[in-house]
Image 1 (spheres, rainbow over the protein chains, first blue to last red):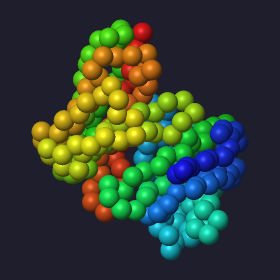
Image 2: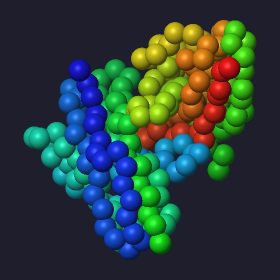
Image 3: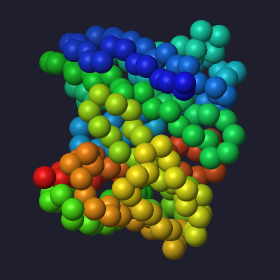
Length: 113
Length: 112
């Protein structure tokens, strides 16, 4: 069964600190993996995309990694800001056809001053 | 930049009522989708369209209908609302290949 599992479910950190969010997937055939940021009351917004051959991708203070062998990805946030408070969703795309997306349930991050 | 626009933002219905959730995009995207987001779960695909006049079922299509008469619009119809359809509904569109999904800000629907 195609699944995407994220951990932790929720996380609280202090402003300025770093954190790492985890994503494990059992999806086949794999096309790519994206991380989305979803602010409260808004739709998700894409942060990064990685294909099978890529093992790291950065977008400002966000760095995503992918280990295709172990089927794990992480999202590292450096020097967190209050505006980083959001849910972060890991999404894996299956190859072929309509490119079906498998969504994780998300990690809810709260950054406190 | 309007992107993907969903209306209404909030709606309360009684069981058995019908309604249409509106979705419009101004990016000339061929692919459009409807998802529902429930607590503790990932987004689940309801229906999708790969172009005007073409629609197909997703993972959880029961109780919902869609149509795609234009590239811009992709409305979602609830035929006879049930409490199990209480959720947040997101419409998304994307370009070809590995282009990212662009999501609207959602419609929060409560069925009493």
